[in-house]
Amino acid sequence: MTAPTESQQLAYIAQQAADSRVNLEFETDEGMTLNIGPQHPATHGTLRIVAKLDGEQVISCEPSPGYMHRGYEKLAEVRTYTQVNTLVNRIDWLGSFANEVPFILAAEKLMEIEAPPRAQHIRAILFELSRIANIALFLGDLGAQLGGVTAVFYAFRDREFVLNQIESVTGGRFHPNFDRIGGLKDDLPKGWIAETKAAMEKLRDFCDELETLLIGNEIFQLRTRGVGVIPPEVALSYGLSGANLRGSGVDWDLRRDACPPGLPYDKIDWKVWTHPDCDSFSRSWVRLQEVRESTFIVDQLLDSIPAGPVMAKVPRIIKVPEGEAYVETENPLGAMGYYVVSKGDLVPFRVKIRSASFSNVSIVPWVCRGVYVPDVITILASLYFILGDIDR
Amino acid sequence: MRRLSSTDTAPEAEATPEAPRDDLREGLLARLREELGDAVVDSHIRPGDDLWVRVTREAWVDAAVVAKDKLHCTFFDFLSGLDWLPSPYGRDMDSQEDLLVHGAPEKEPAPMVSGYAGGDTRFQVFCRFYAPTKGYGITFKADLPDDDLSVRTLVPVFAGANWHERECAEMFGFTFVGHPQPWHLYLPTGFEGFPLRKDFPLLARRLKPWPGIVDVEPMPGEDEGDGDGEGGEG
Image (cartoon, rainbow over all chains, first blue to last red; front, side):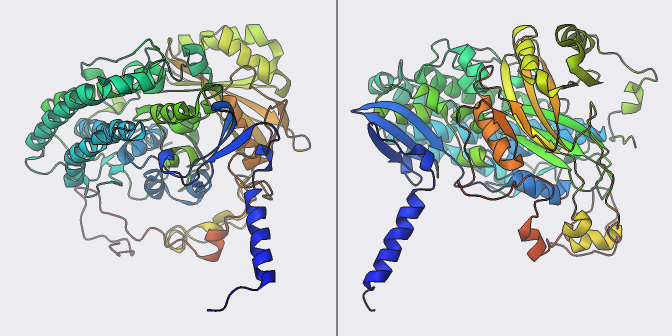
């Protein structure tokens, strides 16, 4: 192999310099610019954060998403409704089934059909299982980012129980693609209910474990208490949702307050947890309580599954009547909605995807102003985003 | 519109002949008309579900202020754009299987039809606010004339509009007047074109047709026999 000539080297350097100027807007003269990402392991993927520092303090902090933008809103315009289901699976990849639910519900609303009760119940069970799988990993990851490596092993170990249950129903551990317009692809396998109850038992133990190991840990509390305070009115105006909003003391859960038809949450008895502190600790604490609450929801749903078919009578080739519908559900990361515009065709005319992380992360410049550099990591971890959910 | 029934529930029973009224949303609409006057151009109510309101472009920010301050809509849900132009590529981008099943593409593009609450222009900006304490949401739309795709920014009212407007601006080519960070969010700085416009071709589909619906599954209870001619099994 010959050494590169000088001109080749110069061309390479020029290319590198051009690449680094993609976001010219971020260049500054004052202070020091710290580039976090796009491949930093603490950023959950390929989020790039450009922070301007004055000593150890952050003057401004600007996320630069888009390194994983896949253009799902455009792609959805040339896919049939069944095919779009496969795409939306990949938005929040830790709780894939939860992405399918609002899209299918929006299509069902336009078609004016409703899934049979049994399908609704199983849908809600899988919905909650994806929530548990998703947030269980968050709890472990939170520990890892704050320097407590043990929690992440516990999380990966116990999330496996949930993924196994999802896999034995849907065949897919990560991307089930199981929801259908008018019901579900299949019924539950034999013995699944008892297995799931045993898994829920284990997950409750996991919650107890992490509550003492992580949330009760003194160092963890020092790192999170009073860091990244978001008052409720600011949280609402930024469109924060889910546990981020409930961690700011806003008692609002779409499952309880505005459950769209097609999910049987009105038949379930459970508690919506909030925390008045508005800081990183309260957001993490609310998420832990949510996992435990979800296991109780799953138990109740398992006890009350009605008999019957899992699929309504729908035409084989699905044409959705003309109209517009917006369905929003309480997903693991927050409120996720699909605004579907149909022209009565095989494909949607326009799909606007309102994903939770996009709004949740847009508050980062506001909340990171003036904090110290290690607190940026705490805040990002406690806001909890999935890159696929920001970039879509 | 066909009304399809599921096997267990009986939606026919719910479909009462007289059109149901939604007093909550009628009240909201009346309040908006009172506050905004002629700026409310058109509206649509789906009883028990949703409210669409079309306002003039000049009243775009005023509508947001009224919704936030008077109608409890403190939660910023989303903001985006709509392009009502029927795709100039027609069925070109459909899968070959779709063409087999549903016939040749239409020669004439369909006329441009706007959605709920009407519209006179190709582009509309739309956004949705939600009232967490009350449990309703309002979707606002505004027409943007082709020669001036600009509208005032909502950032002073809802700080969360910042990223949504930046995304909408780069994807549709709208200008949000007064936006504090009017540069690209997702796309590289020098990107040409506006990807979510209907006349922006999806090049991946043009180069390689999507394989399409080869894996249609039979519905439960349906005969396995009728393959409709496309009996591949994915």
